[in-house]
Amino acid sequence: MKPSAGTENQRLSIVVPCYNEEDALGETVRRLRALCDALDLDAELIFVDDGSADRTRELLKGHAAADARIRVIGLSRNFGHQIAVTAGIDAAAGDAVVLLDADLQDPPEAVLEMVAKWREGFDVVYGTRTERVGESAFKLTTARAFYRLLNLVSDVPIPLDTGDFRLMDRKVVEALKAMPEKDRFVRGMVSWVGFRQTALPYRREERVAGTSKYPLRKMLRFGVDAILSFSTRPLQVSVALGMISAALALLGIFYAVFLRLFTSIWVEGWTALMIAVLFLGGVQLISVGILGEYVGRIYSEIKRRPLYIVQEYVGFDQDGPSMSRSPYVYSK
Image (cartoon, rainbow, N blue to C red; front, side, top):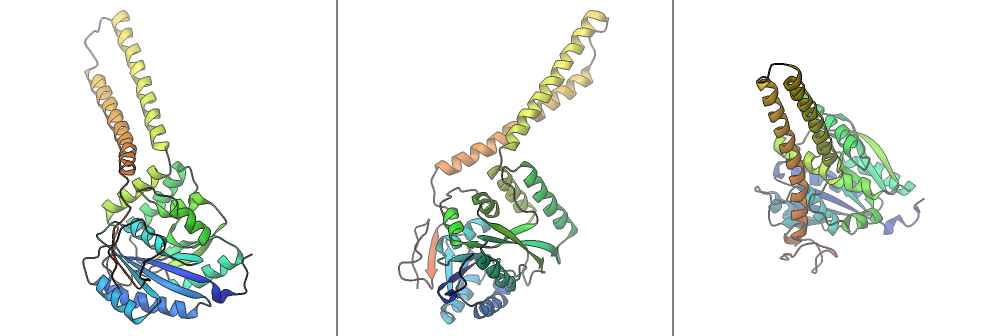
């Protein structure tokens, strides 16, 4: 059990990645400040501006000037949601860290329950969506299918119907900071590190403002990253396809020999030949494509580029946060 005494010395960091969120930002900050006031421990709000093209960073700087609990990390360009989350985790100084999106689909008020479970002794409290308001049938269907497919092929069990909305103890945060891979799937990484984890069911609300930052193309890319980061099963599938195609080719050889030796039909089977050629070609292309995805990830890793570049830190001490994977230009 985590001690209930001395909670005034405990600190909570809330990491909020932002990308073109100017319409939602006022309500987001209001509710997060109310949450901080309701907590019985110190809190810091770390907003990560992921290269927004609107007034998001300007508004965040204004909020940081008005509230000392608010810090801003401005990335030099759009690096993607998972990298922005990582930048926030790297900068967080709390005994526990909460990940929360700026669109308020995940209710900040649920953090109070997460903190209560953390104090019961859980190291990770992840939100599980019991209902998803305002999302299309296509989005709901593909999301359910994705998580079930991921668990089918993944080497690490990942809770169903969860996102990045979660609370993590400092020991989990330190474990994540020790993981340098470029193609990041944070919720899978949290499952991989282990420790004592529990679910917190909640109702996911409709987006306060703005549009989804995950169109179909990004969703597909995210799904591929998740599967390839936590499983070598696609390579095993390509091997199985190769064995199946080889077995079918062997049957074709037996069939051709049979026709030659026991019948007078020598020139036949053009359709079967074309099917076989196309099938084998398809299997080869799929297998080479899967292999290429893994090789591409190796190529990305060995370049040793930083995960992100920080343009400015706002609201931190002069030296910036204690840990960063990036060179940066400091701005007060």
